[in-house]
Image 1 (tube, rainbow, N blue to C red):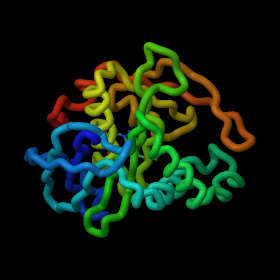
Image 2: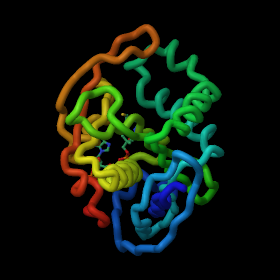
Image 3: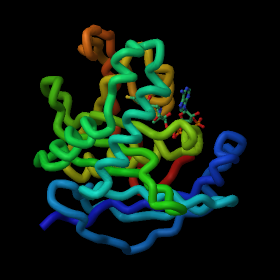
Image 4: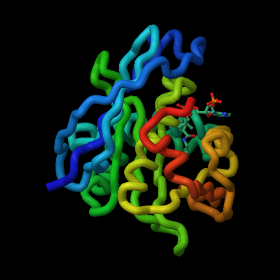
Length: 236
Ligand SMILES: CC(C)(COP(=O)(O)OP(=O)(O)OC[C@H]1O[C@@H](n2cnc3c(N)ncnc32)[C@H](O)[C@@H]1OP(=O)(O)O)[C@@H](O)C(=O)NCCC(=O)NCCS
């Protein structure tokens, strides 16, 4: 039996206002909600919370379930095309298929010790972002947990959903007694400043093969998961 999933509902402005409004938290309400969403997918026993804002558009952050996999794959393909055009070849980006990504993510969802959380727009139950994470695969100790992927549809950028996903991941890693979390980020990724804004430090570099290209990547690491997770409260 898995532990209860993380369930966060944060309210963002309606989509057309997403970039206009930088309003943040006005209240934090705790709700004793818990559910089991399937094998290998629980994000652990963090307490769920609701962030209330004006002009609400409700975004739920919860553990992924197998039915989410096509939407997760669709977010990945859309986000890669929007973010990495000019960094990764057009040929590679244009050849990406949602179906192939879905197969890969369905497989990853079954790996013990790997976790996947999604951000869902409750107005239409659509997955609009996700994060997956687990043990550090590509770095030796003292690297502990790794954030493998973090992607959000472009129209939902800039209202705190990305940070909410990272906080959720950090909280769960902390529960698993992890002391640090890191992520590989392409050196050319225009969103590297997001990691720095959330307190990550660049601690290494390497190369990754994407299709026929070899691209530079930077390892960003967080050493203080209590601070990153907000230790149960929101700091923004
Ligand atoms: C990177 C990403 C997850 C950030 O999510 P987001 O919801 O837009 O970010 P948030 O609104 O939570 O921003 C948190 C803080 O980071 C800052 N930030 C976010 N993206 C930024 C950017 N590209 N440049 C500078 N600062 C940025 C925000 O201004 C905010 O700062 P503030 O607290 O002072 O207001 C999202 O933009 C995304 O999915 N991008 C495309 C895919 C990608 O690059 N993923 C990471 C690959 S490893």
